[in-house]
Image (cartoon, rainbow, N blue to C red):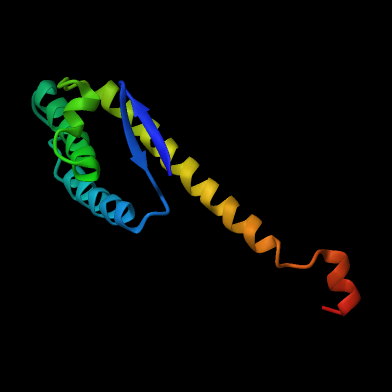
Length: 122
């Protein structure tokens, strides 16, 4: 588990917790569906609003209603939304890598080293 901080908001990100992963999977599935329907033509302001709403909804789905407002302080700014999203994904990736390293270290305790395997003929 780690604490991810953005805009003075701290949120728990645990890529080893089943409950968090269920929310994560559902939120990203919903985001993928929303992304397919995003307006691609029309006024730039409407396109940006829809784009930003997608990120507001993602964080609300992950961490609870109102989280998007806390993270983005109510602003509909595509750059801020993308920077926040990138930061969140980096934190998730860090958690995944740390979990994999812990598992590998734990399993390596029970694996003989190469020299020991040669002696036993394996």
